[in-house]
Image 1 (cartoon, helix red, strand yellow):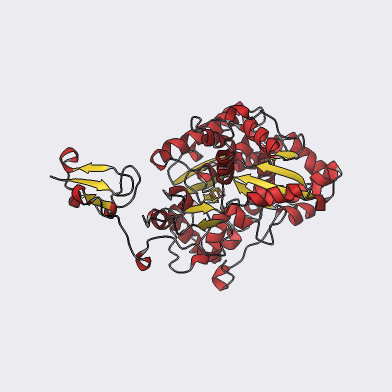
Image 2: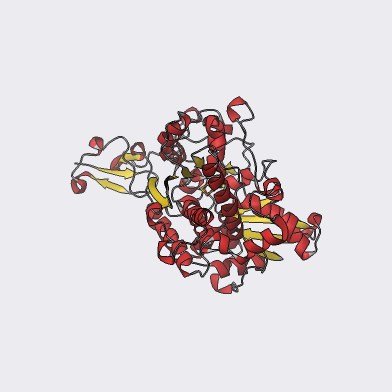
Amino acid sequence: MAKYKCTICGHIYDEEKEKIRFEDLPENWVCPLCRVPKKFFKLIEETKEIVNDNEENLNKVKISNNNVAITRDNDKCINCGMCETICIKREDMKFGNESELCVNCGQCVQVCPVKSLTPKNELNMLLNAKKDGKILIAYTSPSTRVAFGDIFGLESGSFTQNKLVGFLKQLGFDYVLDTTFAADLTIMEEASEFVERIKNNGKIPMFTSCCPAWIKYAEQFYPEILDNISTCKSPIGMMGMVVQNYFTKVKNIEQKDIFTVAITPCTAKKYEINREEISGTDLVLTLYELEEYIHEKNIKYEEINEDTFGSILGEGSGAGVIFGNTGGVMEAALRTSYYLITGNNLEMNDISFNNVRGYNGLREATIKIEDLELKVAIIDGMSNAKKVLEEVKNGNSKYHYIEIMNCVGGCIGGGGQPKININKEDEIKKNRITNLYKRDDYQKIRCSHENPEIIKIYKDYLDSPLSKVSEELLHTHYIDRKKGDKY
Ligand code: SF4
């Protein structure tokens, strides 16, 4: 019997205690503490010998210098292989030397034990805009309000919406708006598009389109199914457009004077706003970047005053809030699709489509709306999508509507969230999901089509879902990246 020590975190594997010889452990076994593979363990007498692979053998994801979302500090890298493992196993990415195929999801950032990989830090752009006297406008993604507290060591999943708004005001933002409003807008457009496709024999199944990592994945590996993807921009894509065109009008300010910043859990959004067909947002700041700033400035949670969102584009329904977790977009869309098909709202008790909820990679449900039997699927983590995507590509899918989110758990598990303790990953993510659903339960307005601000923007500006102006501002198209233009 022998003991082995992890050269990364120091965990001791004691054969006597574990009753399995170390060499008999399966090849995919990982350190229970820091999750590095077996090869990082040394017989206890040999632990002084530090693993020192040469450059050619490095097991790491390749991050191009052109990557707009993620950077790597090579000096910090210890070649543990965790980034590559998560990229291949969980995200199903095998991009060899083609680093431009990276979908920018940032899952590698979350598992990197030494912060060699980080979201591209762009806080200086905000500070420069402030110096230039711009009117600073922030909008916060649904899942940020259950992750902001992690920065200060609060219990995971704590609901800290008003503290987040207060912090952003303290940082110098003139307006803090809520992307849950745009999540509701997305649902109005997407549910209308779905019902339209169902009624008029349009392309079915329809995929959700709010995750830019999933969209880039589809463009690169499944261009055959691009017509199946909803043409709706993501909530941030829509928010950018309504802030530029509607908010400025209502507030009587000039577009050229504003600087718009999306506060996100997501590194891939940094890539999304660089797509020329999805404009409107000047900067994406992840909570990860804010965490670095908060620690650098030693800002204490108690020192932040609570505040509330602005009165325009500052209100989201419960449906908008649950966009932050896997299954949330589907549930929100079904609530409004039900209304669009039947003309009635669901009873409060039926409003939660419980069978679309969960945390297990792939779920499916059949939903009855009048004589329609809708088959839906919900997928989080790209490695869970392959079978479903192959079926759609081959024309034999049984589904009508499919939600795909790149990150496990949905955006609550985004690569730009504050760095999590990966040993508690499941617990943290489940707490975040639970608290978003609790918030939905607590809200008076739980359906996107009942949000008074949504009703008002259609009345005053957009006319109706899928109207000419809605199509122009809120919808987009996709690119076959197998034919070039990969990055
Ligand atoms: Fe970003 Fe959410 Fe997609 Fe993850 S699931 S890449 S956080 S949009």
